[in-house]
Image 1: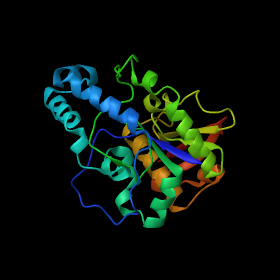
Image 2 (image 1 turned 45 degrees about the vertical axis):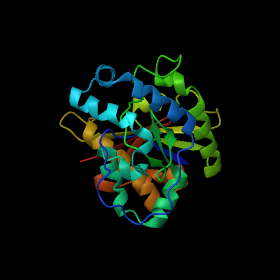
Image 3 (image 1 turned 120 degrees about the vertical axis):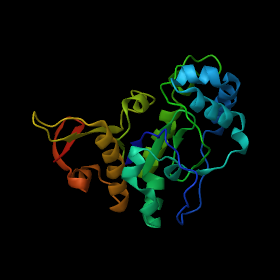
Image 4 (image 1 turned 180 degrees about the vertical axis):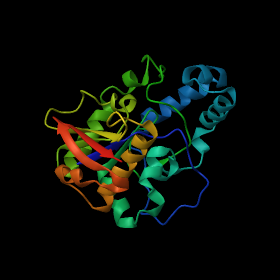
Length: 251
C-alpha cells in the first residue's frame, strides 16, 4: 500500500533537522531539470501571472529557479510545511517510522513528479495545475504524461499490496487519475466535521487530517488497507464507505 499526499506551498529550510536515515535523491531528475530551466527563463512578471502570486513572491521564485542548481537541499517531508505536514509532524517521527514512510508514502509534485519522504529537494513553487510547461506541452499534466503514474505503479508493486490510499488534492491526483494499471485499487478518503446541518468539509482540517492519517499509517506500520479504518487521531472515526470512497468524521 502506498499513501499519496500533495506538496505544500509553504516551505521550511531553516529549522534544525532531526536525526534521519540517509536521504535519497528524486528519481526523475531529467524532467525536473527541464522544468527548472524553463521556469528560469520565464522571469518574475510571467511567473506572477501564471501562478497568480504577488510580485514579491514572483521575484522570490524567479530567483530560486535562476539559482536552482546551487540551492540548498532538504528531505521533502521536512521541507514542506503546510497544513498536511503540520498533521504529519515529521520532526517527531522516530527513525523506524521514517523508514516505513520511505517505502509507503509518496508526494506528488509539479516540479519533481513523485517524491519519497527522504528525497532531497530544493526550494520551489510550482502547482501541478499551472497552465505552463517547457517544450510543446501546454501544461504540467501533459508534460508529465504517464511518467508519474508508471513510477507510482512500480512503487505500489514493490510495497506488496496493490492499493493506493489517496490523500492528495484533486489538483494533484489528476496527474495520475485514470493512468494506473487496472489491478491497483484506489481508496479516496473524505474527512468531515460534525456541523448543525450534518458533516461538512472544512479545508484546513481536512488537509491536516490527511497528514495525520499518513503519520498514523507509518507509526502503526499498517500494510493492510482495511486496517486504516481504525484511524482515530484527533477524534476522527470511520463512518462508512461508498464503494472505494471512505468517510471519516470528527466532532
